[in-house]
Amino acid sequence: MRTYAKITVSRKGEPFLKKGQTRMYANNAVSLSEGAENGDPADIVTEDGEYIGTGYLSLKSHVRVRILTRDPEAELDHVFYKKRFRDAWRYRNAVCGSETDNCRLVFSEADRLPGLVADRYNDLIVTQISTFGMEKNKDMIYSALLEVMQEEGQVIHGIYERNDTPSRTKEGLPLYKGFWKDTGMSVRTVISENGLKLNVDVENGQKTGYFLDQKSN
Image 1 (spheres, rainbow, N blue to C red):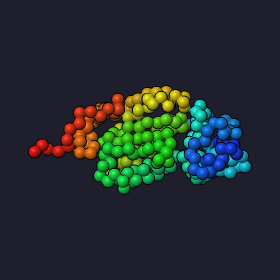
Image 2 (image 1 turned 90 degrees about the horizontal axis):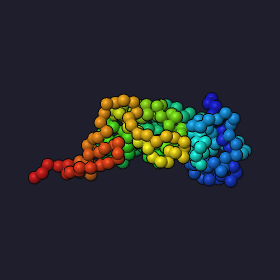
Image 3 (image 1 turned 60 degrees about the horizontal axis):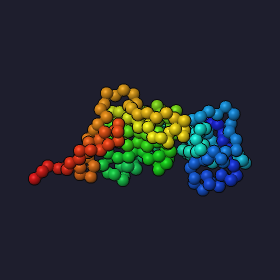
Image 4 (image 1 turned 30 degrees about the vertical axis):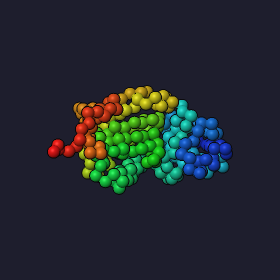
């Protein structure tokens, strides 16, 4: 049985989390297990000891925990992330059909993965992490994502991190961008979007030089 740190929510903050709110704020934290560190997984419990949910601790942020699961038995491990990514991918397939070569693969809370956004551009995935816990566990998380894509028959050759959003400073995280592991890939690619060809520069977040994706008459 797993033994995660416990963070106790106040009676004032308890009803909001029970009604579906996924963020526990610092001003509603009553106590925290001794020795718990920034980015550790933690169970949110009430002052009466009732379990509410599990997420990563953000000790420098006003949002102390973002809930990843409400299953008291769930472990935030490789298997957990593979299931989340598989659910996200199959949802995109159902909604986007054949347009999944260029789409948003993961959209934070919408995919029950707060703190992570991932966009696909052909064989390149561009990610943005905004929480300390996700950053701390990104190697495991990225590996799970790539495994799922491979198992679903998708060719992905690299991950580019756009971790330069100012909101990271609220988590005590540095700002940077670059490839996760050296891939030798270009930061530029060409995608199809609504009948157009777009030149995409993932390093600078630009889409330029578009033209019709069809032969001239």
